[in-house]
Image 1 (cartoon, rainbow over the protein chains, first blue to last red):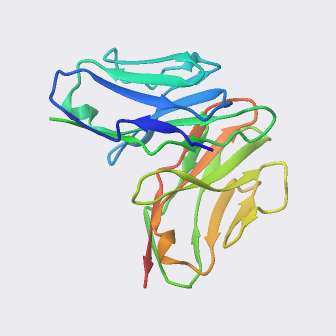
Image 2 (image 1 turned 90 degrees about the vertical axis):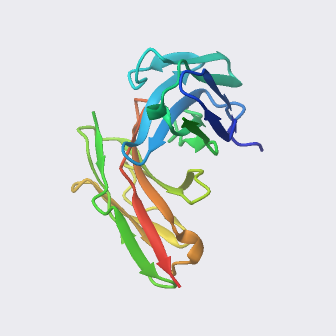
Length: 115
Length: 114
């Protein structure tokens, strides 16, 4: 079975440019999470969705960040305009929660570098 | 909000030896799930082991086992017969039975010495 698929794996862009990160969760999973990982701040939850509906976006840094989940098999995280401090690894993770532990399955991450 | 604390930023172990990584958490809930995730240099986070709080028996997965002390709110990971491939960052995580959010610790970087 395919795991969580993220693209691109690496992105280098210049300050002010728009960045779009993509995620395909595991088929059948009903929750999707976006995390950001940096050396300074560790692993931070940005937003998560249940059944394609955003539940908690309190971790989204500011209005420059937006996330969508138009259907159960696709989500995007967009940064516009990007800034050097957005440089990080962005992880997408999905889970299936129905009476069980609902552990997270992570993608391989998208490493973003903003120059 | 729940908090998860990993007090050991770095640990090292000799190959074939045993190492224990510590994790404590703070919660007022009686039922929850605990996890250990491994993040190797390839950076993908992989589930190592999980523990349901209502189970008294400590979870075991091959060379990995936990010491779950519910009263002390402690959840340590023991790696036996350490291998070079165990070198990674290890994260402890908490999830409520009712909620959907995960709470992660800051991680412990494990070095395995040949």
